[in-house]
Length: 433
Ligand code: SPV
Ligand code: MG
Picture (tube, rainbow, N blue to C red):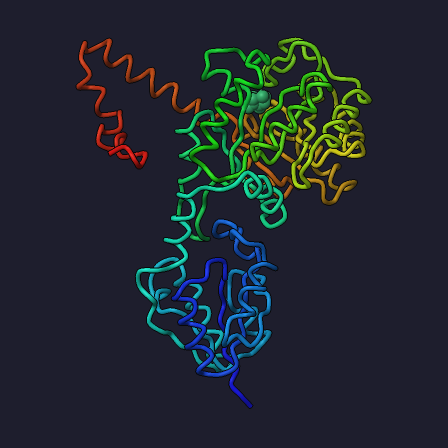
């Protein structure tokens, strides 16, 4: 019987390095490809450009591939135990870098199974990482970007979203990555916040910045990023206007709009009961959600209902009753907001909502109850965590400090120590030279 050789791969971008390893594997036996599923990848790296089914149909048609099976975990080991191959083949690039632990585990498992680990020289100069970066430079399409949020929700335990109010803040979210013990950490997408978008224009957060103006900031962000965007739609305005907002956002490739169940002059939720916060009638808000759902033209766009009961001084019970009605009206997810420090009200809501609705995404904005970690919030049932205002809140004091230093010293020399070097800002955005 022919030897069985296992090859684990993402199979998103096919390049000569992939073809080479397939050839080398097929030379040594029947080649079984373990194709990483979206969820195996999502918690470690960016989602692939192609879906699992699309990747599978490409890889299974490459000469030398005998069979493609899903690899549901980032680790190769569960599939090695399942298929008991005589050998596993891998590029030797994993001898150093982030895959070292995976490599150690594979050696241990193969020793146990009596199989062999074959390492072949890694094809230099071309790999999916550099090709991925090249694709990112080219950009994305509205369709691909729009659909990305649902794919992330389906495949990640927690979708991590950060506020962007300008192209520059969008670029931070797009590019920042941190390698930690359990893999590569990054933000999954952006929140177009009414608070930070308004504040950066010197306006209060009272729906005074109209949609056309909000779209200008959004366009700046869209032009230099590829990650999905959730748009803060405030109250959604009048139902007759909201249906146009939905289509405008979709056309621009925004993945979701969140609208809150308030009426009258909107005030920022974090004022809580210090200001007047009037809740909408349940039926009226349901009608607005349903009208939005009828208006959307794509399958993937999401309308998320934001519950302001706890902000306006009402109970978890009230929020639950409303959440149930909004879901029945067609909401694709709910966002529960609160300004308590403990977050116990949010926890109570999440736990009880999850008993009723197993799969409706829950969005949390832990601005005040921020001692809880993402893992803990995920344990309550949350799917999306939004850091709603932190880049703007971080930048303002930094700007004030620089301005103060110049006033104090009547020159800018002292401010240099907390400003980025001129060379760095010149080179921050490619294409300036
Ligand atoms: C925003 O970021 O504009 C929000 C969240 O709506 S909050 O400011 O907490 O109301
Ligand atoms: Mg807002």
